Image 1 (cartoon, rainbow, N blue to C red):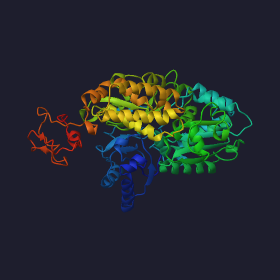
Image 2: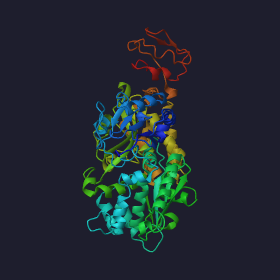
Image 3: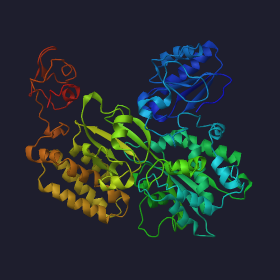
Image 4: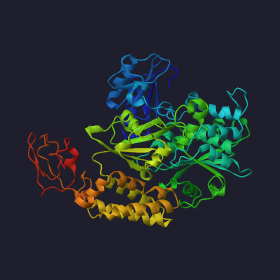
Length: 609
């Protein structure tokens, strides 16, 4: 993770999360300070290192010493951080860690692997993200990039010096037990082998970078931080199946990812990795970025293919499967961003090392987007089989503000909501499905005790109903019916029989819908009813939302015995309904209260119900 330098280098985290946190101003401050002090140093715009909670971040690397990572950097701090490290006195209070390498470490600053949130992670796929310049082919190659492609197509580094045949490549991927990271968990090698059976026809390689789940940003971070790894994986796939052309279907809401993909592909063409006669082997393949218009259903394989063809993005019945008749009715392989990024890494490290982490049925790691009520929000990469507790507490730092864990919504609107009793469940494809959820693409939204599971279910169902393409009746009508039921319950108009209807209609929708959107859309609501039935009963029978999240059921009361007189609720109240002064027990004037919930949010002592 370090490299020999002849002058200082300053990396600024310019991924989407970093820029949203103020990295543009930090970058400008770096440029200004170097110019003002006439310091000869390189400035590198890198991507997200996974610690989104610590953005904006900069790394400073001076020749002869380890590279240091600084967190939550403000523009007016940049000069002191640079000058301090150049003079040999880095700001240890602002530094998070230093990257491991051959260079001497700095006293008082821990190594990256020593951070609590990194001890149980394995940066197998994210090893370059936030570390190298994503717009530099040379830096990707220096980190081991395209060695897998050369090993396969030229025999470089192999004991016999011979290129691998397409069949050998597929067998290697099969032996790795790599399963698709896009949600379904299909065996990647098996999929490739099925597509390879069709000879003397045009074949396509597609990368699904549509990523529409609420709370999901794994693919975006990979594309922004390590676009060449995805491209290399696609080229290897194309060689293995006899692919002739490929598309990366990326949502238009990811402009930085699209930009860096296009830069990387042009670099590959000039270097001979893409285009005609790749590496002089006679094999040809080129790629193109296709921007999606934001339809969630286009994450489904056949809808995605229709969209590329210029048609309306709607699923079609299967069979035939895409490996037989996909894009333009030709054999097609579709994998997602993370799956393709795994491929070159597996060839780089070898099967033995790759299979040393993961489970008996699923090799490797999985990247999760950890967000919600958790201290260390960001990207987490762990071996498959790691428990939910390890991810949320050991890596995520647990629940902030001394709140209690309530649920984790895993897999987005197609997943499920799991309770505290399942925190020690391993995260793998089979276990999550048995628990009533699914791994999905990898979003993981943590909920604390202030979350209303009825409202959360309604939110997910509203998303699915809005995103339904409308082609099949179970999804088009069924999701709307479930949404109506959940909406009534949040308004205090529900009936106990609604809980049975949710299950009955949900089963119909999941069994009869055409595509994966409908087949999984009721899952969050059904898992919520299963594990948090008391929340639903409270709304239906008592007409009370226990967390005061549902506006039409709010009935705020200040518990006099719990009020500490801190005054945190007085000033924020927009109508002056909180009566009293600081250091006094306050009370609520219900005639002035508009049920906005500001006082509830501000209270740190659970004195407001």
